[in-house]
Image (cartoon, rainbow, N blue to C red; front, side, top):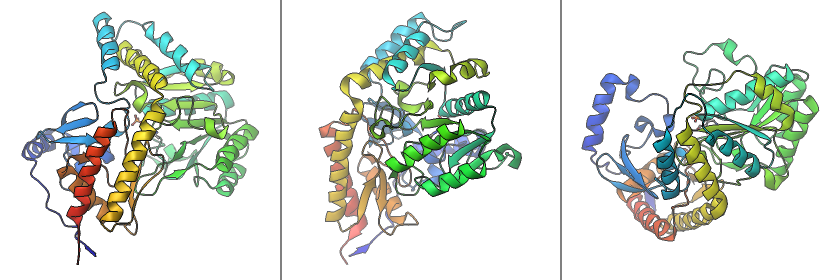
Length: 417
Ligand SMILES: Cc1ncc(COP(=O)(O)O)c(C=O)c1O
């Protein structure tokens, strides 16, 4: 068996013309968002999308795809979910950005403190970066300490100390960041020992979901070591659930390990695509959270909060992690079997709700690029180097349609020698 990795890209005339317009008026034609930037993707990938409905999305050239990107996480229940959009419309009728918060802020805080096991309070912002940055500020205000321990490579946002790109950032901005290796207790303890007495917080994601590498679940030993180290140091344990919100466990992603953080940052799926993020925390950090200055002109908007309430209620009622888990397992089994049948050693790694595509011996991602490129032409939107997302709208029929698409894509990139 030999592998043909050069497959013909298809034409995206409208996408090309919008890209040309963007190049003239938007820096680089696309700022940030490396994961959705078509420059970093195989040639058939669209840059611009027109709409979404349920488990499907359409590019500006009118191609329909089964969407396994789900806006990189925000779409939990399916695009334009009826219950969420009804809540949005009802709140929009009354007003969105008012001269103070609406009652929805309190409703949402009550719902989150009822739902998330460790949460005694909640405050809100827009993006994940807002929530992780606020978490760090609360931790520093509470402890009077400076250092922030994080896993190397782990993404926690786009601010001056978390950004993965250093353009425009000074070394001083990152002075208080200390890195350890995810799932490596010895490396964590070494970092703690080196900065003992000056550690404000340890921030960690529920599992390792770095781009380009296989995903890795947190070991119970690692999660407990993080908890113990934070407690011993009097530092805050911040769980960064920006990406995992509502997909793994609505009570908190480390509940199954018996490990509770002091602060959790949520965003992305919290409002099924509407812009709101949340920082929740324990009572011991309540007064520090009341003291820090974190705000924004749109942080009290009522419509996204109404969307979040409907999303969380629906996620709890249908048990979204289980529903999405079943869909994710069906897709994983189907894709891996299709790959094997076509002669490829391929796996979807990590939680089935947020799988990462991984071909064996494919360090340069040549196979992943060829396969995801071909999958587009068979109606399936996948990602070659970032984790993907399954939604509750991916029912059996949709998943089977996607599996038929990936069977055809594998056939397209494989030929018998
Ligand atoms: C784990 C994690 N933390 C923080 C962020 C930052 O969130 P946002 O892009 O909404 O600022 C992201 C975004 O992808 C993320 O995945």
